[in-house]
Length: 234
Image 1 (cartoon, helix red, strand yellow):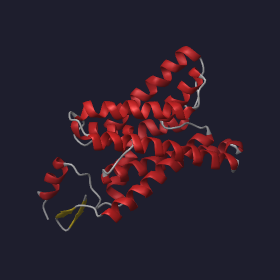
Image 2 (image 1 turned 180 degrees about the vertical axis):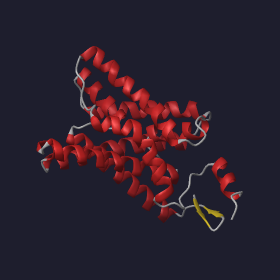
Image 3 (image 1 turned 30 degrees about the vertical axis):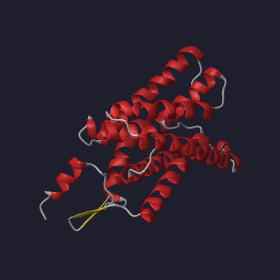
């Protein structure tokens, strides 16, 4: 939804495609870069990586399994059956996993894993910031989303009164728990580092700041927010 001069407008098809493509690429780029640096991935990616170590299977298997599980859970958390949301979540999750793999392979080919620590740390943080920016954009477009980010969007407005930081941290707490459980059985811990901590504590704020500063007229299709904007003093 687009807000300008006191009026709300539905996004045109061309706008949806543009914003969605930009956001998907930013998110996949950021995740691929953080995986390649091995300095800490977003908590859900780290959870999938630790499950992969525990069960000796490729990470994409668990990225896909998590996406499917959360997509189904979203139906119950949202409180209504929405086939479009379900199939959109699944489609996005699979597309996202493929792009993350491609970007990660590209950065590995470019030698990112072999850079010095002082290069990999800032590159990892840049990757995490890109993830937050991408999430902010496609949450506001609200066309289709990765099920995990859709979960954050649902809980943000249903349980946390629009607070992106609280919603994101509650989401990440579950992901960190998955890594902890996998570590308990495997005694190995991967993909958890400075980038994970940065993502856990700051990604919600990055999303909130991006909401206000990048494409600020692009707003959540949320009735509570619309009501507030309509009654905002001019």
